[in-house]
Length: 118
Figure 1 (cartoon, rainbow, N blue to C red):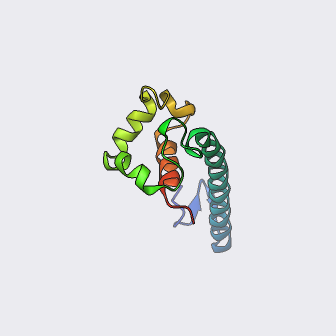
Figure 2: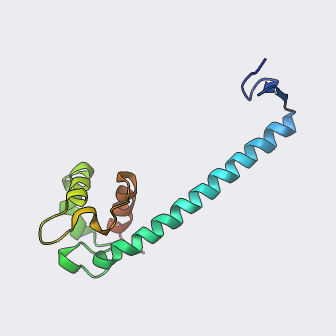
């Protein structure tokens, strides 16, 4: 009989309290490592964004300049994602130099770039 983690057996193996605790710690460690890898990937993608957003090239809102980001953010994230995906003639090329970025990554990058830097 196979029961969930709270039961006596999992996948046919008997887990002691220490075994369950060790498995939970290992799972959280793995999730932490995955989170760190995703953050490092996002940092690399942020450097790509910096080609325009660090200098304001082509009218791009600069990092941490909330006033420059406000008109874009007021339209809502779905509209901003559409602009990034499709581009804005004369300013933003489709994909914003990050054609492999997911919508979730673009949203995270926008949130980082639009916040005031301390």
